[in-house]
Amino acid sequence: MYAMILDDKLNFQWAQVSDPVRKADEVLIKVHAAAVNRADLMQKDGCYASPAGWPQWCGLEVSGEVLEAPSDAQVKPGDKVCALLGGGGYSELVTAPAGMVIPIPEGLSMVEAASLPEVWSTVYLNLQLEAGGMKPGDVFYMQAGASGVGLAAIQYAKLLGAEVITTIDSPEKAAFVKKLGADYVLDYHTEDVRPVIEKHNPTVALDCIGGKWMGECFKNMVFGGRWIMIATMGGAMTEINLETVWRKRIRLIGSTLRSRTPEEKAAILKALQEKLWPLFSSRKLISNIHATFPIQQVEDAHGVLRRAENIGKVVLTFFK
Image (cartoon, rainbow, N blue to C red):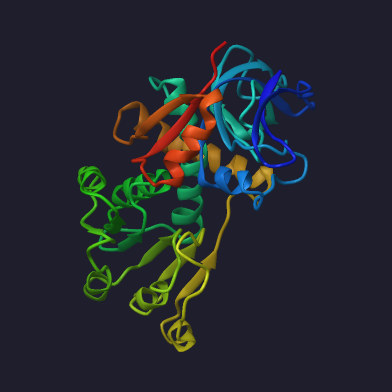
């Protein structure tokens, strides 16, 4: 098979590699599409290797057709599926534990399906499991609201009845997230989110930015609030008055999906399939596809994310 590997200088190379060897509890998939995530950019930069046992090239979520599967798996050869991976999705063939492979939502294309497993697992893990869910009247704060995770988190928070505060960086992105139901949308280039946070104290924050203003917003969390850190795109340093943490019983939670066990990931995917896939089929939830590129144009696809141009997901396609 061919895969978009990283050479010894971390350059992309479409190269012939050995076909994956399926283990007894794994599914072999012919890949049709693979979504691009910021973790892929970090891996391309040499600072976020795949976990042990996974191919050391990019790709955390794919869609495709099952070629081989265990006899007791919920999927069988010929099924259209999507899968959550630890790495290696930028390739013609992948294997994954059977629990990390699920049918695509009815009515969705392969491109749409490839965009679902990573971001929606991230959102369900953090808003439902780490934060304990939300309810009507809660306030949810999500920066980078037009990112893949941002669009998913806004929709899920609104589904649970929360108010949503989010930041974006263009009028086009603002218009899109408002259509998804975001209540307070601020352009971080021209507007200060802190006065809004002061008036509408968050119950839950899902933070992929961090940076110096994180501490300024953190102090306005409600009593018992949950601030979940999943990345530090805006910088790893901030200042927090630690008395705020214990006096208001705020939980500062660090979280990553990639480091979870296959069993944990399988449980999350099962919940997505049961609870959310019907909502995708009825179009009550969406995964906006910003752009698609053939796998050979992977540099162009990564460039869209690096320049923060995307509203939603960028997906790579494989032509057979």
